[in-house]
Length: 93
Image (cartoon, rainbow, N blue to C red; front, side, top):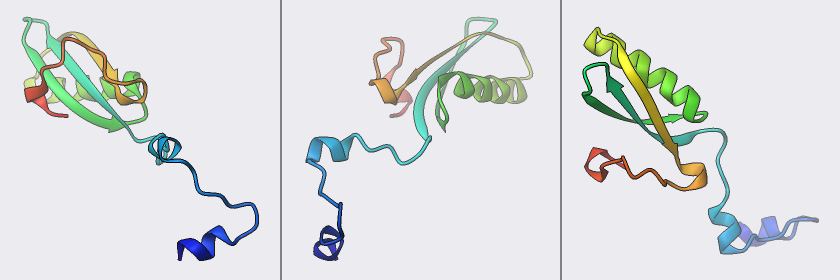
C-alpha cells in the first residue's frame, strides 16, 4: 500500500524526525496543577486545545469536585516540551 501511495504524483516520504513532529489535530496533552485556596495541590492531565483552555477546564473540575475556590492554576503543555519543575512524575505522563 505504501508503494501505491508513493507512486501518486507529488507524494514523498517524510524523514523520521519530521514524522515525529506531526500533530494529529489540536489535541494537546497538558500537565495542569490547580492549587486550592488552602494551598492543596490537585494535578490533572488534560487533552485539549492548549494551556489556558486546559486550566479553565481543570479549575471547573476542581470547583465541582471540591466545592471550594482555587488559588491559582499552572500548566505545561507538550507542544513545546515539558519544562515545568513543579510537575511530579507520579501524577502521570
